[in-house]
Length: 265
Image 1 (cartoon, one colour):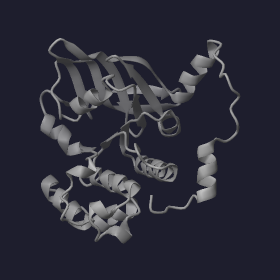
Image 2 (spheres, rainbow, N blue to C red):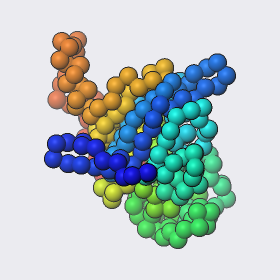
Image 3 (cartoon, one colour):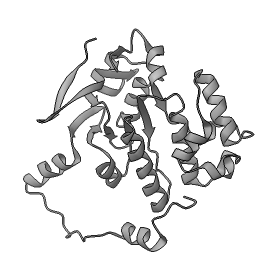
Image 4 (tube, rainbow, N blue to C red):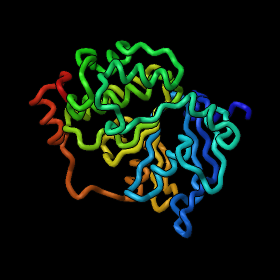
Protein backbone atom coordinates (compact mmCIF):
# COMPACT_ATOMS: atom_id res chain seq x y z
CA UNK A 1 0.00 0.00 0.00
CA UNK A 2 1.36 3.40 -0.92
CA UNK A 3 2.07 5.83 1.88
CA UNK A 4 -1.05 7.95 2.31
CA UNK A 5 -0.87 11.64 3.11
CA UNK A 6 -3.63 14.07 3.83
CA UNK A 7 -3.58 17.67 4.96
CA UNK A 8 -4.36 18.12 8.64
CA UNK A 9 -3.65 21.88 8.42
CA UNK A 10 -2.92 23.93 5.30
CA UNK A 11 0.74 24.21 6.31
CA UNK A 12 1.30 20.63 7.45
CA UNK A 13 1.07 17.21 5.84
CA UNK A 14 1.02 14.13 8.00
CA UNK A 15 1.11 10.45 7.25
CA UNK A 16 -2.02 8.39 7.79
CA UNK A 17 -0.98 5.58 10.13
CA UNK A 18 -4.41 3.93 10.55
CA UNK A 19 -7.03 3.72 7.82
CA UNK A 20 -10.43 2.15 8.54
CA UNK A 21 -12.77 1.74 5.57
CA UNK A 22 -16.43 0.76 5.97
CA UNK A 23 -15.84 -1.43 9.03
CA UNK A 24 -18.74 -3.72 9.95
CA UNK A 25 -19.09 -6.11 12.89
CA UNK A 26 -22.22 -8.19 13.38
CA UNK A 27 -23.12 -10.60 16.16
CA UNK A 28 -25.91 -12.55 14.55
CA UNK A 29 -28.62 -9.94 13.91
CA UNK A 30 -26.96 -7.37 16.16
CA UNK A 31 -25.06 -4.72 14.19
CA UNK A 32 -22.39 -3.59 16.66
CA UNK A 33 -20.37 -1.60 14.11
CA UNK A 34 -22.24 -0.32 11.09
CA UNK A 35 -19.84 0.71 8.36
CA UNK A 36 -17.54 3.21 10.06
CA UNK A 37 -14.61 4.86 8.30
CA UNK A 38 -11.89 7.07 9.74
CA UNK A 39 -8.18 7.82 9.53
CA UNK A 40 -5.60 8.46 12.24
CA UNK A 41 -2.53 10.59 11.59
CA UNK A 42 0.92 9.57 12.74
CA UNK A 43 1.89 11.25 16.01
CA UNK A 44 -1.55 12.43 17.07
CA UNK A 45 -3.76 11.59 20.03
CA UNK A 46 -7.02 10.38 18.52
CA UNK A 47 -10.10 9.81 20.64
CA UNK A 48 -13.05 7.50 20.09
CA UNK A 49 -15.98 8.76 22.15
CA UNK A 50 -19.41 7.32 22.64
CA UNK A 51 -21.90 5.86 25.12
CA UNK A 52 -21.64 2.27 26.32
CA UNK A 53 -22.51 -0.14 23.52
CA UNK A 54 -21.78 2.40 20.78
CA UNK A 55 -19.19 0.13 19.14
CA UNK A 56 -16.02 2.06 19.94
CA UNK A 57 -14.29 -0.67 21.98
CA UNK A 58 -15.29 -3.32 19.44
CA UNK A 59 -13.76 -1.21 16.67
CA UNK A 60 -10.51 -0.84 18.57
CA UNK A 61 -10.30 -4.55 19.35
CA UNK A 62 -10.65 -5.30 15.63
CA UNK A 63 -7.83 -2.88 14.77
CA UNK A 64 -5.75 -4.46 17.56
CA UNK A 65 -6.29 -7.88 15.88
CA UNK A 66 -8.07 -9.10 19.04
CA UNK A 67 -11.48 -9.51 17.41
CA UNK A 68 -12.56 -10.56 13.91
CA UNK A 69 -14.55 -8.23 11.65
CA UNK A 70 -17.54 -9.00 9.49
CA UNK A 71 -16.37 -6.81 6.60
CA UNK A 72 -14.36 -3.71 5.75
CA UNK A 73 -10.70 -2.88 5.24
CA UNK A 74 -8.10 -1.85 7.81
CA UNK A 75 -4.53 -0.73 7.21
CA UNK A 76 -2.11 -0.04 10.06
CA UNK A 77 1.10 1.72 8.98
CA UNK A 78 0.39 0.44 5.48
CA UNK A 79 -0.08 -3.17 6.64
CA UNK A 80 -3.29 -4.92 5.53
CA UNK A 81 -4.93 -6.47 8.59
CA UNK A 82 -6.43 -9.26 6.44
CA UNK A 83 -3.06 -10.31 5.08
CA UNK A 84 -0.51 -9.64 7.84
CA UNK A 85 -2.15 -9.40 11.27
CA UNK A 86 1.02 -10.69 12.95
CA UNK A 87 2.99 -7.78 11.50
CA UNK A 88 0.49 -5.33 12.98
CA UNK A 89 0.91 -6.91 16.41
CA UNK A 90 4.63 -6.11 16.26
CA UNK A 91 4.10 -2.35 15.96
CA UNK A 92 1.24 -1.73 18.40
CA UNK A 93 0.92 -1.66 22.18
CA UNK A 94 -2.35 -2.53 23.90
CA UNK A 95 -3.08 -1.57 27.49
CA UNK A 96 -3.62 -4.61 29.69
CA UNK A 97 -6.06 -4.77 32.57
CA UNK A 98 -4.17 -4.83 35.87
CA UNK A 99 -6.00 -8.02 36.84
CA UNK A 100 -4.09 -9.76 34.04
CA UNK A 101 -0.66 -9.39 35.67
CA UNK A 102 0.97 -12.31 37.49
CA UNK A 103 0.47 -11.48 41.18
CA UNK A 104 3.72 -13.06 42.38
CA UNK A 105 6.04 -10.97 40.19
CA UNK A 106 7.33 -7.47 40.93
CA UNK A 107 7.29 -4.68 38.33
CA UNK A 108 10.80 -5.38 37.02
CA UNK A 109 10.03 -9.08 36.64
CA UNK A 110 6.75 -8.36 34.84
CA UNK A 111 8.47 -6.09 32.32
CA UNK A 112 11.16 -8.71 31.77
CA UNK A 113 8.47 -11.34 31.26
CA UNK A 114 6.59 -9.32 28.66
CA UNK A 115 9.81 -8.30 26.93
CA UNK A 116 10.59 -12.00 26.56
CA UNK A 117 7.14 -12.66 25.09
CA UNK A 118 7.71 -9.84 22.58
CA UNK A 119 11.27 -11.10 21.94
CA UNK A 120 12.33 -7.51 22.46
CA UNK A 121 15.05 -5.98 24.61
CA UNK A 122 13.58 -3.55 27.14
CA UNK A 123 15.17 -1.66 30.01
CA UNK A 124 12.77 -2.06 32.97
CA UNK A 125 14.16 0.92 34.89
CA UNK A 126 13.94 3.20 31.86
CA UNK A 127 10.27 2.31 31.44
CA UNK A 128 9.58 2.73 35.15
CA UNK A 129 11.31 6.12 35.08
CA UNK A 130 9.04 7.21 32.24
CA UNK A 131 5.94 6.46 34.33
CA UNK A 132 7.45 7.70 37.60
CA UNK A 133 7.54 4.28 39.26
CA UNK A 134 11.26 3.73 39.83
CA UNK A 135 10.73 3.65 43.59
CA UNK A 136 8.16 0.87 43.11
CA UNK A 137 10.40 -1.36 41.00
CA UNK A 138 10.42 -4.20 43.55
CA UNK A 139 6.72 -3.86 44.42
CA UNK A 140 3.96 -6.14 43.18
CA UNK A 141 1.00 -4.73 41.25
CA UNK A 142 -1.40 -5.40 44.13
CA UNK A 143 0.71 -3.07 46.31
CA UNK A 144 0.23 -0.09 43.98
CA UNK A 145 -2.40 2.64 44.19
CA UNK A 146 -4.99 2.94 41.44
CA UNK A 147 -3.07 5.62 39.59
CA UNK A 148 0.18 3.71 39.88
CA UNK A 149 -1.47 0.57 38.50
CA UNK A 150 -2.71 2.52 35.48
CA UNK A 151 0.71 4.08 34.88
CA UNK A 152 2.36 0.68 35.05
CA UNK A 153 -0.25 -0.73 32.68
CA UNK A 154 0.63 2.03 30.21
CA UNK A 155 4.34 1.26 30.67
CA UNK A 156 3.67 -2.31 29.50
CA UNK A 157 2.23 -0.97 26.23
CA UNK A 158 5.64 0.54 25.48
CA UNK A 159 7.77 -2.57 26.01
CA UNK A 160 8.03 -3.42 22.30
CA UNK A 161 8.71 0.22 21.32
CA UNK A 162 5.42 0.45 19.39
CA UNK A 163 4.44 3.04 16.79
CA UNK A 164 0.87 3.10 18.12
CA UNK A 165 -0.62 2.47 21.56
CA UNK A 166 -4.26 1.85 22.42
CA UNK A 167 -5.66 3.04 25.76
CA UNK A 168 -9.21 2.01 26.64
CA UNK A 169 -10.64 4.35 29.31
CA UNK A 170 -7.27 4.65 31.08
CA UNK A 171 -8.40 7.04 33.86
CA UNK A 172 -11.68 5.43 34.90
CA UNK A 173 -11.95 5.26 38.68
CA UNK A 174 -8.98 7.55 39.37
CA UNK A 175 -9.08 10.65 41.58
CA UNK A 176 -8.59 14.05 39.89
CA UNK A 177 -4.88 14.29 40.75
CA UNK A 178 -4.13 10.82 39.39
CA UNK A 179 -6.11 11.64 36.22
CA UNK A 180 -4.05 14.79 35.62
CA UNK A 181 -0.82 12.86 36.19
CA UNK A 182 -1.91 10.28 33.63
CA UNK A 183 -2.78 13.03 31.14
CA UNK A 184 0.76 14.37 31.49
CA UNK A 185 2.15 10.88 30.88
CA UNK A 186 0.07 10.43 27.72
CA UNK A 187 1.25 13.80 26.42
CA UNK A 188 4.85 12.78 27.15
CA UNK A 189 4.44 9.53 25.21
CA UNK A 190 3.00 11.39 22.22
CA UNK A 191 5.86 13.90 22.37
CA UNK A 192 8.25 11.00 21.77
CA UNK A 193 6.50 10.32 18.44
CA UNK A 194 4.08 7.58 19.43
CA UNK A 195 0.53 7.70 18.08
CA UNK A 196 -2.08 7.31 20.83
CA UNK A 197 -5.63 6.01 20.35
CA UNK A 198 -7.83 6.53 23.38
CA UNK A 199 -11.41 5.86 24.45
CA UNK A 200 -12.88 7.78 27.35
CA UNK A 201 -16.19 8.78 28.90
CA UNK A 202 -14.68 12.00 30.26
CA UNK A 203 -15.27 14.84 27.82
CA UNK A 204 -12.85 17.16 29.62
CA UNK A 205 -10.19 14.48 29.15
CA UNK A 206 -10.88 14.20 25.43
CA UNK A 207 -10.89 17.98 25.04
CA UNK A 208 -7.56 18.32 26.84
CA UNK A 209 -5.73 15.38 25.28
CA UNK A 210 -7.06 14.73 21.80
CA UNK A 211 -5.96 16.37 18.57
CA UNK A 212 -9.10 14.95 16.95
CA UNK A 213 -12.05 12.89 18.12
CA UNK A 214 -14.61 10.66 16.46
CA UNK A 215 -17.99 10.48 18.19
CA UNK A 216 -19.59 7.04 17.78
CA UNK A 217 -23.27 6.30 18.38
CA UNK A 218 -25.20 3.12 17.59
CA UNK A 219 -22.29 1.69 15.61
CA UNK A 220 -21.80 4.74 13.39
CA UNK A 221 -19.52 7.79 13.46
CA UNK A 222 -21.76 10.84 13.82
CA UNK A 223 -18.97 13.45 13.92
CA UNK A 224 -15.21 13.65 13.54
CA UNK A 225 -12.99 16.72 13.93
CA UNK A 226 -10.83 18.56 16.41
CA UNK A 227 -12.54 19.27 19.76
CA UNK A 228 -12.37 23.01 19.08
CA UNK A 229 -14.00 22.66 15.65
CA UNK A 230 -16.80 20.47 17.02
CA UNK A 231 -17.47 22.98 19.79
CA UNK A 232 -17.44 25.89 17.32
CA UNK A 233 -19.90 24.05 15.06
CA UNK A 234 -22.26 23.53 18.00
CA UNK A 235 -22.02 27.19 19.04
CA UNK A 236 -22.72 28.24 15.44
CA UNK A 237 -26.13 26.52 15.67
CA UNK A 238 -27.13 29.00 18.37
CA UNK A 239 -26.48 26.63 21.26
CA UNK A 240 -25.86 28.29 24.61
CA UNK A 241 -25.01 26.78 27.95
CA UNK A 242 -27.81 27.26 30.46
CA UNK A 243 -25.24 28.49 32.98
CA UNK A 244 -22.25 30.71 32.40
CA UNK A 245 -18.99 28.84 32.85
CA UNK A 246 -16.56 30.09 35.46
CA UNK A 247 -12.85 30.43 34.76
CA UNK A 248 -12.20 27.37 36.95
CA UNK A 249 -14.20 24.40 38.14
CA UNK A 250 -14.30 22.31 41.31
CA UNK A 251 -11.73 19.89 39.94
CA UNK A 252 -9.31 22.79 39.48
CA UNK A 253 -9.92 23.77 43.12
CA UNK A 254 -9.22 20.20 44.23
CA UNK A 255 -5.96 20.03 42.27
CA UNK A 256 -4.85 23.45 43.51
CA UNK A 257 -5.51 22.66 47.16
CA UNK A 258 -4.11 19.13 47.19
CA UNK A 259 -0.98 19.95 45.20
CA UNK A 260 0.10 19.49 41.59
CA UNK A 261 3.19 17.42 42.30
CA UNK A 262 3.14 13.70 41.60
CA UNK A 263 2.09 11.71 44.62
CA UNK A 264 0.83 8.24 45.24
CA UNK A 265 -1.91 8.68 42.61
